[in-house]
Image (cartoon, rainbow, N blue to C red; front, side, top):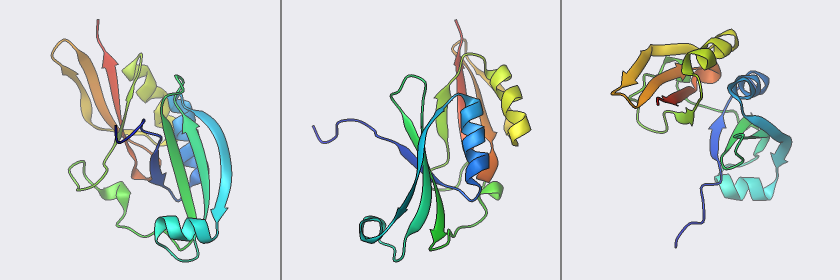
Length: 146
């Protein structure tokens, strides 16, 4: 076997505190925060002078993790993710299973969440929604229907 498991998904952010608050409100648990810099970080990323803050969050079941990174140096660069549509090439969302999709969206709205399109029903199986939150991060939410 080539891999053992998926360890985490990484997302680069500008406002670490807002991103953490958003994912904690979603139901993730903050495992910890750390500062990363030095030769290992440089070699691993292929960048020079890496200095960033990271936060690791985990899902309630403990099986999945999300790593948020805020680069001090070199500065993060990219087109504004808050303006990207769902069909842009590259990683475009993280999907979470939720118990009550509408209640979850309502809890996330004070953290800047906006639903892209509408909450949609997939046959008799799922309610689905894509929600854009802080930093333009798109989170997919899926509620399995009985």
